[in-house]
Image (cartoon, rainbow, N blue to C red; front, side, top):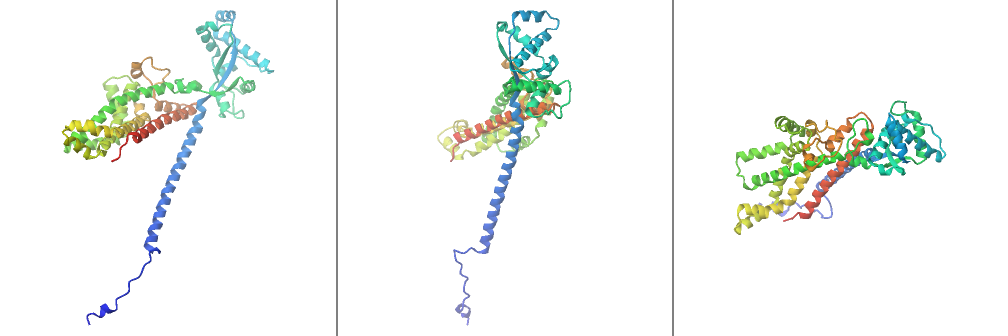
Length: 442
């Protein structure tokens, strides 16, 4: 009687391995949806990255070209003496230039009337340029010299499509009749577009000459700032990381330091600018707008990043390395500096380069120490002056150009962004190469 239930057992449902049950199908469908979501997110990110890259390149490439007028000009000693005897010397040189330009157009079968005012609207103060050249190079008198003169920003805008005949209104900067002269010069091959090395190697020219503005002096200012950041933040950050990770006792004081370091890494950069203004300029009376002050401020901002990345690199070294070194008789310091630190060096270098790249692109701290208000008109006279003399930096120079009213400066700002991104990409690529080259896996 008790075995009745055992005589007729309920048959178990048989399942085939070749068939997928509903639960497995739901899991597989969820996995496919997750993969689709991930792929869609990647495609959306790549789309916006492509749009950003195309916008930057399209808007910034015109800054690397400029409109130039190439004129063969010959000045004799008699003409120079006659011009120097005039009351308005630069006007006399301008008249000689106009006569030479008209002669060259007539040789090409063109007759276009223009005066000194038209030449000044197209090329600026030509007479002063010629006079300064021949006073510095008297040996070139009575010899043909090819002068390559930069056109004004309005003429440059005409070639680049910013200025249209239909919308142009006569002003002291450009008149509609001047475009006839420009067209004739273009037909004669005298005026054309050329690559602008002056944009890469030059300095800011002020608000009245956007065509002559360059970012070279700002690149030098950023270079000196990065030297200060590297010299200060790397040894201090690595030393602090080694002490906190390898030697410091675990107590409330070290916990407080670690929490504060993490909090400092999230502090807005403009707070460091206020700190630099109060401490380095107002209290210590260091020179305003100097790369030294900018480097000190950026060092404070970069230190938390370097400390966090260095501690992560030290933690990644297996404890067995330390134990093996201590087991063969090495001291704690020998184990750290002879074994742990060399193995963590790739991560430390990577974190340092990323920290420098972050500091290179910062603008807010530089606003408060005056590097935006100063217009860098030239290169430093020496190595020490590069740290102490007022200068600008690439992000500050880009901000200054973007804030000016002339539309031509917008091109300069976009071109400066391209150069800044090139530096940032280079630094990040170096960091990746160093990490791949020296990284060791256990």
